[in-house]
Length: 248
Picture 1 (tube, rainbow, N blue to C red):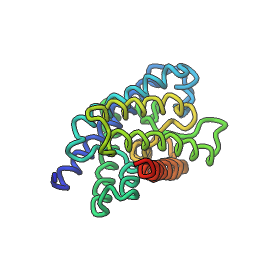
Picture 2 (cartoon, rainbow, N blue to C red):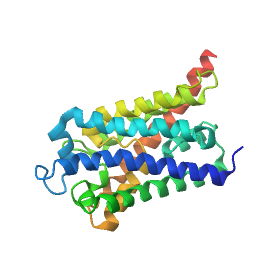
Picture 3 (cartoon, helix red, strand yellow):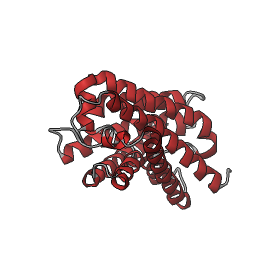
């Protein structure tokens, strides 16, 4: 067993890379469109200007870095890099209670460091134009609708994780690829609905960065990206266990 400290560091680095490259793609997409996007309307800019093409590119940025992290850190920490995944594995009795808090703290720290690093590298345009890639419901999407969308997206992600990474009968070697592609697909569809977080840490980092650096204060939306992903992930883990036990 790898020591908890090393596993936590792996989670911190993995979540850092996830947020740096994933939200970085969203930020750069909006910065490229500078002059066409109204101030503080970072979510509208992506969908209005590029349609699904932008979201596919952003989704692939997230998906490919997740794939790399899974192959790099999977054998060390399991590469959760998502508090919803950690809590779902705990709820399904596949992760020890004593390790839950260190993992989640490491994930939140990694996400936050990534957001501040992006602001340092790209300048205040990353905050004022790109909103640090923060997620928020799009126009016409209500609070409950957004929670349900996030829950469904994370449900699909967690099903993939259970099937290709947790299940002992899963064929080896495919976990990183399948999980990364699943994330990319979910973001392509949900991007213009909720911003497609499916990960509380991924939203926490940009929210905190925006708040500290003078960007938009979106914390009123944070429960969407807490309740939806956690509920969806836990439900998926429990459903998978039920179905696999019934057929096994």
